[in-house]
Image (cartoon, rainbow, N blue to C red; front, side):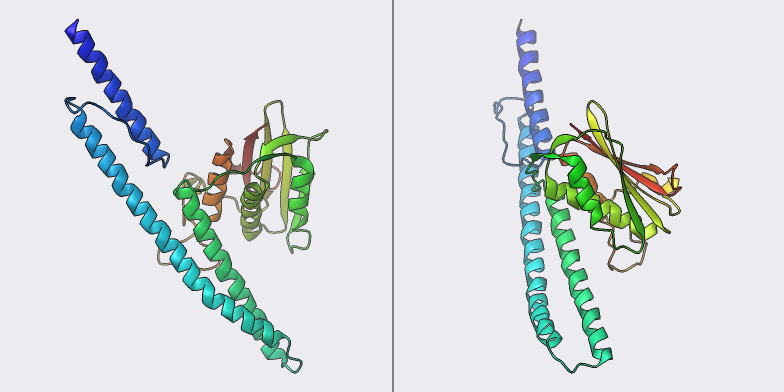
Length: 278
């Protein structure tokens, strides 16, 4: 009887430590459990809590540093934008000066976009990104998202295979960000065509983004959603920093969905498929 009793206590404490590590892996570092100081697992339990506290402190430090850097960079950018807007009002600028102003405006836009990507990426890795879902009709919503690219040099076509309206629960801002990332990625590699399509069955909806580029090499598919995957060794940060697909995957995961990449049988390039539950 004593052996059975001690075994039950031991098993119960193991489950507490398992729950503790599971919560920590989900970013819930404030969660703590308690086990008796007489337990043989007490030292392990204490070490796990200490480790969690140190990881939490490190994450908070990185969080503060990220926001500080973003703020310190955006402040001079705002000043530059104000000066640029003033220069645009000048009536006697040469053609060369006007081109330079356009170039500066593009650079400011790119830097702001990079900062936004870094902040969003940080939120996904620190479990700060939360879904604000609402029930919306996905067909008309997705059509509006794709229509934004109608002036693109690469033709972007929207195709729906749904006969009726489809309502699902999702965060329109976050999902738009994910789909924009996929379309932008497709436009980088497409030769002339990108197709965005919508499918639905009884349980799920699927959004496909495919292009007529060279497609993703099999050797790179397994790492394609890894952060900074778009950078080669020795390559400096530029307009494309390899975070778009990483962020898209995290956003889809927040919606309890999945995202996979394959080869497009229709266009021959890459095909990204987002699957979301209804």
